[in-house]
Length: 222
Image 1: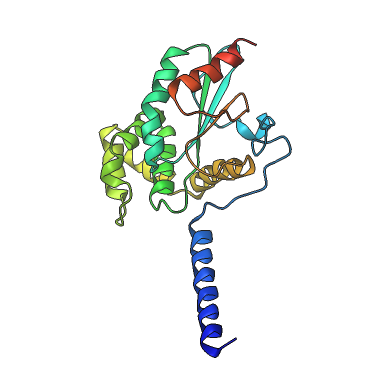
Image 2: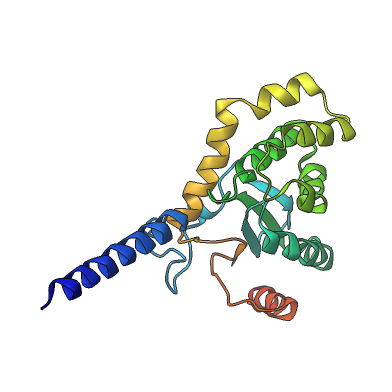
């Protein structure tokens, strides 16, 4: 093997190593799914999928069917799914429980801050109003290099929140832990991207609104 060929091969190996490192850096960290979790064909453990403090956007009295969404407020796909989720909530009102869980992706620099702002609004009974506001305005603050703190404070004022209480909860370490716990649970269940949906603990293949309805209807029919 000539010296030039050896150098060329070494250069190729080095370039591949750099590319591999970059891909690993940008990938959402993974965790091993729990036994019976959604990483395979089983059913996600109910105790991990929905915690006692998980946000229930709608509640069915019989508790027969529960839809859980792991979402990232800076995720464009989550924003696109939002109106469809609202439509499903109206269509299945009283028959299906809808649960929202946070899953801020590290590469979305403002996602965690947005989740904590929604959690701070939730402490004053304005969770839905704030997370709806986040989606409606996502194009103005998402994927930005500057901090959206001023923008989020403006949302809080618009909603008539007590600003001192909002700031206290927003920047509280317990709020950060609350958001992070949702994300840890998602990772344990095999969630790798957003939005990820579970219907009665199972993760259906969803490519359309009709697919989602079919998954829910199948569980209601049991």
